[in-house]
Length: 412
Image (tube, rainbow, N blue to C red; front, side):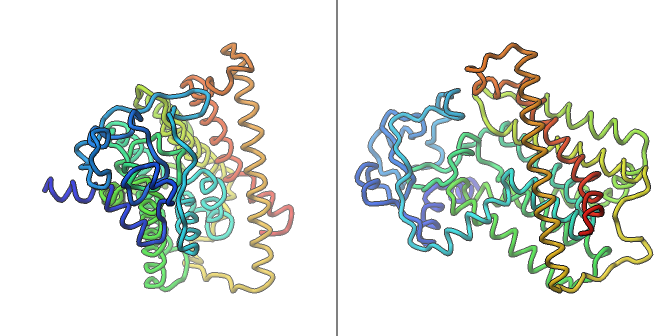
């Protein structure tokens, strides 16, 4: 068993996949970086990310994952990440541009812009019920995945031989892949939940779910951010969480919408989980990203509960379910595009305004000087409340106000 795990966790497997997809180390980087056949930049022999085997002069492509050092690079507060000594810009060649664009777009499905544009689109264009269900399951799997990353502390693939395209998240640990978890959860939760709400051919929906989740999973190998083991564990963990919670989805919906305890529990619990997130001995974006997700969930929960109390949920009447999808006429496409542009603009403006106001208030409260703002943003007492409040308001605005704005503008 350990042999298979070592094989699935081997960085050379990721590098081989990248080469097959046309992503290779440039000649200049190869000369500087040694005998590597893939990677994003050379690492000096004293770099903390190089394994003991590489420093000893062995071929990087044959480094066992067990020989990785468990040390982490020194954090640099001025560069929003780690201090990387002697590293130049990534030097690689793209020999298949369609795959490059496809996998980078697929990888973007797990980034912040996805949280505030794509997920709300389900609310704007399909059914607020489906958006609520997706946010609930997405929050669960992402919180579990992020916490496991920082408890297990397993490293990402080595570079070289791997080309790494997303240096922001390279400061995080590897297993499990939360992109794979989120893609699996969102695709198949939407499929399972939509069958009773929307008229569509299940086989087509299944194919779309498989294709989208597979693209995101493969993008984690292509970008060099995860091993095959990370991705497989992410998919299996997400599927397991869905299976365990599926019998309780309807009961949780009823509690979320009708219980008088809902606004207290479903705001206080995410805030508590944000403050009790596992501490590391260095800064990692995982705490901030997790707080972002928990803030969105808390805001959406309060918003959907408020809509239920006001008697305006914007959901189809239960007797009309499952509803037919609207035909893609020119008018429907124009209204959909208008909703997307207006909704995204409102949420992005909300994000900018609330984030700036929360940071100003917190800096004043803690006496942070203007010159120290960069490093202060990563302190827990500033990062957690700032991100939580910002995305709590975004969730609340999306679930309560945006559809009402659509009604005023005549585009809903």
